[in-house]
Image 1 (cartoon, rainbow over the protein chains, first blue to last red):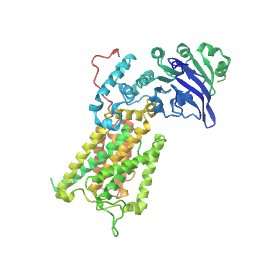
Image 2: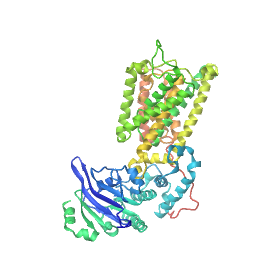
Image 3: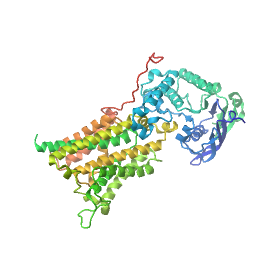
Image 4: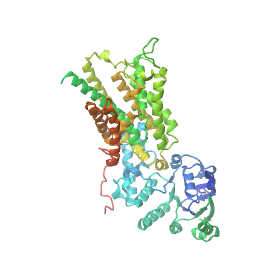
Length: 256
Length: 327
């Protein structure tokens, strides 16, 4: 297997209980480079818990997670983010009292004035990198047609705009892979179409993604492959057309 | 102006500067970084105690008061040591309480810590001389300067002004920087900040220690002025006075919280001292706490941003108009 064929993310036999309830019960799957891997399943299947484990927010009780061939199991969220694995949240997680521009800028890794000493050295030290950060952030804003909102406090944005903000912010963090937790939840159809187009553009640029989503039509359009979870386990993998025809998948959705 | 008025005004000015230093430190923790430190006053008191014993000289048998770590350090070393001592204590408390607990539980830990600290200081008489505290703390450079008492007062006010300016610039260095932006992001949503690669535990600890050190410095300058220290002067409600100053002035805005300090601990608490005593002795003092509580509630309800609200970062506008300005 060459470097390019090796999966970017590999989840092996991951387990997690919450007070005796097996939220994730030996889940295993791979995500390939340059693809949008869909993660679907009925409510309570353990998708969000699994995403939390991959992103480091929840510690697994067993199993391994490796990213680009490196074992990242149990690492704290900020360290996993610094490897280039950036998650977005199911519920809006904007920095409410920061402007849209600031929300984007804050996400950039390795900023000069972010240490105490660096901060106290003042704009003479960090001013130049800050200025280039403003330009980068504005380029992202332009791309997502959010430039007019640049100085708006993020807390004042609409629900859909907050989803968009979250994707823009994740891009500022120099991701190699995005973990998108229901990026279309509560978004109006027009904006959802736009977000869909953005995600396809990003995929075309080579960005890998995992997307948890309930809206199966979207999953069918943009995800390949699709991983189906039920009761904490991965029960099926393949293209949406294939998995949706399988009996175990239908059973899982019908039984809940 | 009569000497008495001058004495009063200079004292008020000194209190204002010292309180501003304290409030700037708490604002860094609470307003900017979102750490709810109900034990802030403990770190002020520890700094004050440190500066006191390091100015008093070594304890000796037959001394009317007892303390630990007595020494006779020259100005300004006791103040520096106070910052270090409170900073170190913050590190210990922070490592224990800030790493794992949720912020609401952190707040409870801090409140309890505040109560425990007072009880220990009051009852373990061998440690910090119990409720009697310490007296006769020498004023810095008093003999060396050789000024008349009133002139010394003004000189001390001047020194406090300089120190306040230094602390203000230091704090602003943080709040106006990329670090300040990351702190505000952590305050607004720490999970999201961590998911973007911010080490929120390290940032919280950093600000807890920096704020604690500033608390210690404000306590040191205070104790060297009033020349006495007692656990009863730094009870937990004092933290709420600082918090009230922050909420009234405008959390996360350095100018706002300085205005809040002028209005709440200095203006409001001082003005009410001139009210005639009614009902019984101490009624006005008791009502002060009620009013501080009401003040916090009123502002949280009607003006949650405070008088001068937090200001988001401003950046040079674009050279050309942004695309898609249809809205």
